[in-house]
Amino acid sequence: MEEAKMPKTNWLKRLMSGYGIVLIVLIVIILALWISTDTFITYDNIYNLLRSSAVNGIVALAMTFVIATGGIGLAVGTNVGLSGMIVALLTAEAGMNMWLAMIIGLVACGAIGLLTGVLIHDGKLPPFIATMGIMTITRGAIMLISNARMISGLPEEFTDIGQITLGIPVTDAEGATTTYGLPLMALIWIVFIVICFLIIKYTRFGRNVFAIGSNEEAARLSGINVRTNIYGTYVWSALLCALGGILLTARMANGIPGLGDGYEMDAIAAAVVGGASLSGGEGSIGGTVVGTLLIAIIRNGGTLLGWNAQLLEIIVGALIIVAVLLDKVRKK
Image (cartoon, rainbow, N blue to C red):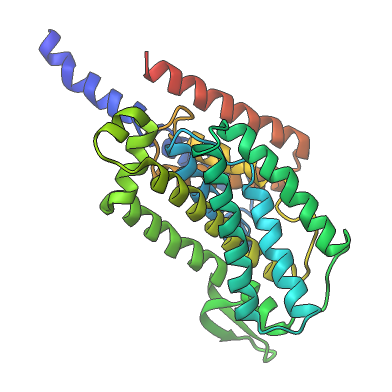
């Protein structure tokens, strides 16, 4: 009897240890919304869902790397805001070429990521304290350089990034042409999903990130350069967030001082619900993508059903708690 039960136990263990349950929940919610609303499975809704999820998805990828090391990234939202504001100021008020402005935004956030890594590894600050301090400083810097005002007048070639659709143009009976396809922002998200997956699966850096999160001292004794990998993790995370900020600013067509506020919570939720462990050493890109879509669809579906926005926040918060509790149960 015991031998007959082993395959079932192993199958359940694999399901619990990955993001299989979350994927099942996601499918069930999609089916429920499909049945209960007439507008969920429509081109316009799916298009807007993908476009709005792209930035959250990129920031969640950034958070996955940080959580895998056993850290936390409370400054991801402010990196989104900083890169967007830098690009807005340089293009709208300084007349700089948008590509050069975007590079400067990326470099600035990369430098903040490096500083964060230094504070955590060399300064021995807990990641929570280091990133909270960086978050506060960066948010203050955004308000300072923008005078806490919205920056308008961004060049059209830049704002077009948030509007471009890659697909097939269709002309209706009245002569109006509409392109049906994939938003450029969603395509960029997909590209970075693949890049992040390849980094984790096939590079030494990706393996080192999880080794450090599992046991930093053992990783050090096995010859892993912990300093370099911690630096690299926070720089890579900051660069992903900077990219998200550039895309979000293009979509909003304005430089917004409060851009990115609250994104850290959705990013943590997506990674943790997708199977990442806050104690480090566990997580996957696939799980984070599923977690991102789950949270986005809950919010989108709740809005279509007329649910209170605060109720949706309660649901997302409950998801985080349940995911962490399940992680604790798995490790017992």
